[in-house]
Image (cartoon, rainbow, N blue to C red; front, top):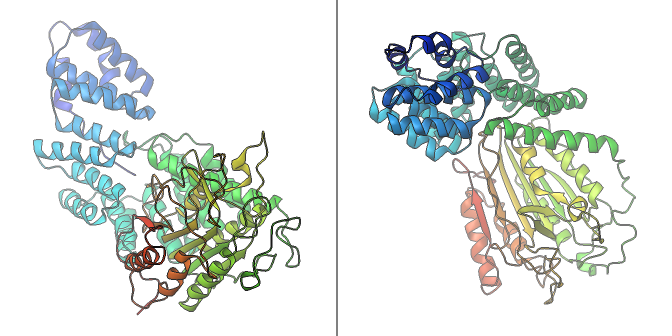
Length: 575
């Protein structure tokens, strides 16, 4: 997101006043220390000056600072940090701390960025620019209260700061204050209508409010402005504005059912050069969305009478747990689409251990969610094509939601630190890519990472590695083979979109097996279905109750686990 730069003009003036440096000043000085100089020329000029070994101390620090500015223009934040660190060693300054902190911010290292901005503020004098940039880092961490406080300070110091209004508005939006967010971002547009960034932020709010036409209009204008004029501030990561604008317009087109234009915009996102963390995350989202749209176009939909695993030789589940072979009918999203859920239960596996209970578990959870007002997309015993189609349809429905719940029961594995859900037609063959036959959990997480909702993901799946040589040996468990288990998520969403937060809950702790259970439901899903519909029960308190019941029911063999970036209390069932 937009960050601001302090230029050490006084230091530059002192540098070129140095005696005996007239020729170098004429040839290299302006190229090195002029912010409009192209990046490669700036870096080359500063490098030649450093090689002359004429300067030391404060003056050499200034040269390193300007070379860092050149690296920043190229999006090479590792080199920015190297030069800024050397400048700080030679002569600490507010400007250099700000530059290095901004580079750490663009790398997604928010705590280090905040430490640099703190040092800049301690050196003084207080600066609205530093408050603004520290607010960005707090916002990157999801600490929106501190971010808003810093933007307040930035606006007090500079009432005409369009970007501080924009980012304060985005922070309010993340906390659910859509009207307050809209007021701030409208003020940013009023202050400087030539800026594309506030229009992109406003488009997110329009989409959250369900006004897709306005979201498309704002992002279209943002794209026009970004193409017409390059960012004036050299701290803006190259290409980041266009990548963000195309991503948001693509999401708006998709929410509007215009998949052709959505695919064009996602392709434009992937064609850009992503240097900062936000742009890389936007490209990850665009990649997932585009792949899902293309796969939906190429995959024939099964009719209701077609079985999901026609050739399955797996033993049939007991009569009490029997499930229809075809995916269950899915209820379409309502016009408002405020609370949606995806529920999948896979148990009738053809080539790996069958699980009796996942279809039962899915039915129970789907009913509990419908009873508290969720629109539920439900699928039972799905092969890979059916899973991909069901997930795609759900992600499209979720585009207008405020809360999205994903529940999966069945086999699940991790490969190389990534989690995969296992369709019922899975078959591991020598020489084939195992992951191609499964569904990457990151696909769902990236598909939901678009700023406007709270996401709750619940996996009642195993934590076993399919590469291990031994099959699980003690009764039915939600594992294919013994191994290292599912991977804990490295991040809950990319951090670029800064939405309302994500919670992901697993039926068991890392490295352990989630039991299928001896009754009609797994221990985890049985407890979850009892508590998910409790009125007025906050979701993390609900999971605490579920955890206690599962531990008691399994005599400590299974301990549910969760990780959360939620920003406040979330209630699935209203009081």
